Length: 380
Image 1 (cartoon, helix red, strand yellow):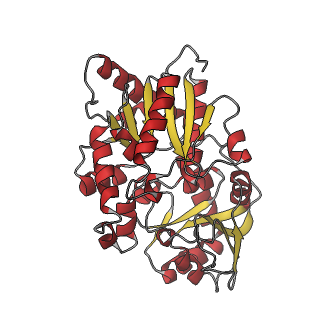
Image 2 (cartoon, rainbow, N blue to C red):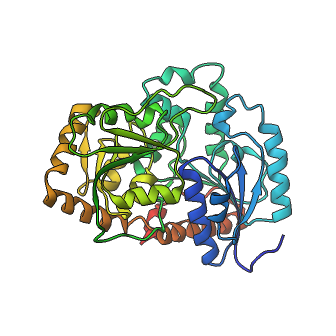
């Protein structure tokens, strides 16, 4: 493989949802800053549109290895260790960036950074079923996550709220916080339409689309929802179009952004969202935000969004208020656009580069663990 003269980063990712958008955005930023980046996929392969998002500047290595949350008992772990470390020997990275946990226990010859985007344990708790993790199927997963956090040179969470949750659940040492970032243009003065928009995995209980759908019938504006309706492996559609709700199904990233640019309001009723990249993109597209009142959303958007309890009536009340108050709409839209500038791809890239460089320096000195520090300050 050919390399640039800068730092070489081997990064794992999946092609499902926001992790791919995050990895592609960070990868592009790292390449622009002089790094050489190889992106290696686990789980379903990316489609042509996703591949095009790499701009031909990032080496893409596709595998058929199982994602850890789809392989909770670890049947694919030994094969993953062989294949991924073989890629590393060929690519010769300076740092391995893992967007999952299990792989940190493999025998890497360089520092490893684990990024905690989510985890099944915290997801199950948010869905009201924490007991599922204490079953033979899921106990190996819990052990692998804890082992990966311990083995990593450093680990990162996208919000302070989620970092503290991971520490509490797995007994990990405190990790670093680096906010996710977006490189889509911040839109201003767009001709907005009287539309309420939301996006995500419709089948996922943690996304809580049922509360939004229940709030919709009496609203003055239509509610449009984009996202995968059917859970992978199932043939039934648990939700259908209902009064004042249109389910658009899966859209490309570009199509989703078009919807965000047209909509006046974006809603997330999620019970679980460690960061919420879709919310950030909606803010950059000039949407007013109405969000569930959870810790991560409060951390990122307090003061510029409206927050609702997990109650359809509360969402209906706030949505009705925004639909009928143009001054409030403009105030919220301007506030979210301005706040979204804080969460830029450039700031995210600087923070990760600083963490990589510190990890390499410590590793050269013989230290396999980076001292706990607030790398969020590197965003400034």
